[in-house]
Structures are given as structure tokens and as C-alpha cells.
Image 1 (cartoon, rainbow, N blue to C red):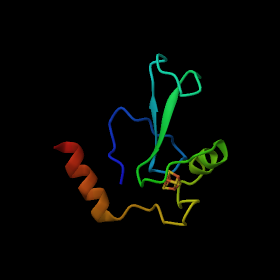
Image 2: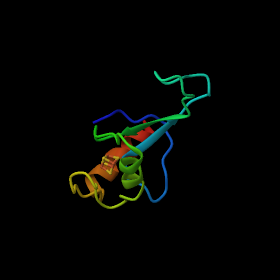
Image 3: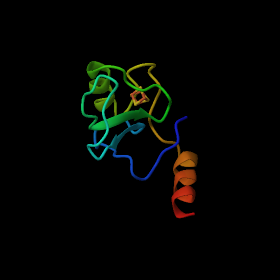
Image 4: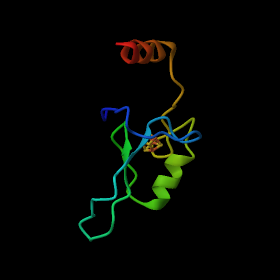
Length: 86
Ligand code: SF4
């Protein structure tokens, strides 16, 4: 799994593991384009195209890539609360 950061942006209605890291507009891609944000998948399967990113943005309950269920178990929820209060 990819390590989550508080500065990463989430989107309501998107996969709960989808994150964006918005940049400050001073970075460029290898092609010289202005880098606006980076995209991460906390499961380690980042989208590699606009179509895949759109699929992640619509996969709130189940991963479009492998069908993995996104419902959070009570144990995972408790672990998240313990981590965020530490
Ligand atoms: S690849 Fe699957 S788990 Fe990863 S962000 Fe997209 S929908 Fe979520």
C-alpha cells in the first residue's frame, strides 16, 4: 500500500483510495508541461491514463481494475481512528 498523507486531496464520490497531490505550479513534467497535480492509488495501482483516472473517480464502492470491495470493515475503521488520533 502507498502511504497516505494529510496534504493529499480526496474526492467525494471517488474511490476511497484515490488521492491527488496538488503542486505549487513550479514543477514540470519530463515533456516540459506544467505539473498541476500527481495522482496516487493507496493500493499501489495508480491510473495511467485519463480514462483510468475517470474510472477511479467513479469507483466509490468497488475497484474498477480488479473488482476489490471498498467497503471499510469495523476493524479498519477503528484502526484509522486510532492512527488519526495518535
Ligand atoms: S485503481 Fe482501484 S483501488 Fe486504486 S484508486 Fe483506482 S479504483 Fe481505487
